[in-house]
Image 1 (cartoon, rainbow over the protein chains, first blue to last red):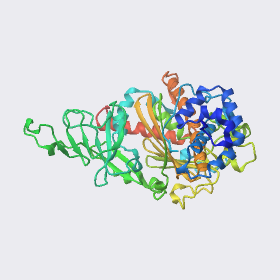
Image 2 (image 1 turned 135 degrees about the vertical axis):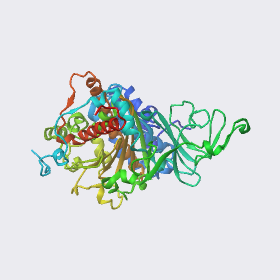
Image 3 (image 1 turned 180 degrees about the horizontal axis):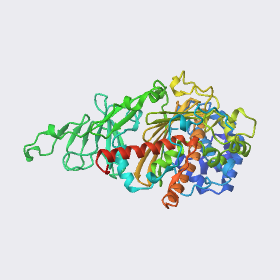
Image 4 (image 1 turned 30 degrees about the horizontal axis):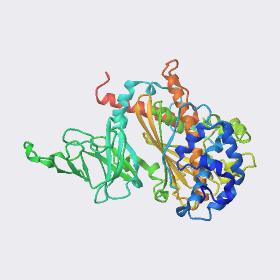
Length: 111
Length: 422
């Protein structure tokens, strides 16, 4: 019996999975805004070097039949997308000069 | 230094016979103008309210709150499969017919009939009143006199349009005209992966429309989206559109198809490289088959997007890599609006493909939020009434055209209603 969220070969990312396996864009974006740039950078630095390995792992399965741990890995990849702009472009969580503005994702593809 | 040839007249603005003078912006800050614009523009034009994908079955419906017309409309696929629209009002005591929890919130679902929450009157999905609670208590009463009030509704290429006029001045296809009809046959029906976004913006709807109708701002406002190696020369060069077109009240701007991924390392972000996708879409285009020549009426050899601005408040934005966005702008007061954006992709074929879509959608949002906040800043200062005009340049021809059309529509309306002294 294991509480692991991710497939075994990604066990070293479990601490990030606990925080970042979020099913909706709204949750992921809120998490990004609630995190410090240090936290975003740490997640990015740990996961970005593994991105090709993660994509290849997920690609063993059809999109409409992902086992739960693979689905979690997908959510972690979506979160990596969400934080990538903060790390690669803005060097802060929020997009500069955007104050309280928001564009809310109401409908998105599942998974 | 022009990178793209201008028309023989020397500018796009003069080519389309528009004035080159600065444009007053009172139309974006005046409550009085807004009230007239509601009548002259929004209660007369065909308005896109969604796509048939949102009505997948007979009995599927959704409601649309149209604040600028102070009304609500329910759009439904009736039991015969026909798409219809009705004012969202019960004929008995005027209660809103279809809503859940909060009367002002939009809703959707599937039903066999509409039942009013108040006294239980029922309507079939073609609008007929079919049941009245204690009908015998009413006087000289005929149910046939109390069907739902229809709204003109038509569907083109899967896009649902309504018209709030008693009698529309034009049919939908007359209204759309040759330029828009030119992309009939685009594989809209293949793009079933849908992302839908909403934002409430504290600016006049035209200011936000102006933002998406010109790309002159992009190398400046959005410079930080790209690595410095790309952003710096891009800003230095500025933006020029290779092609503009105006057809009746509708407008088109094309972009020139810069492809950072064909450039050296350092011109794109690491995540874009890893996923082979960015705002421009997937680096390898989707196979969507032949698209109608009308998507690219300028016959450009390469292009990034073709941004069609449909009068008054809709954008269809085609991307060369084989997907499209729709924007709808809904005024809610003279200085507030609702912005809706829908991204349509061919369904992701694999997990890798799906993650790439996430990247494209995220890029859309990163750019969009910058646009939203900037328009709020503009509205605030325009309302200070320190200055009264915009000097629009040739790359801002489409905003110029929109303001001109709105002012003309309001002036014509005032003449028609005797609201001005001749």
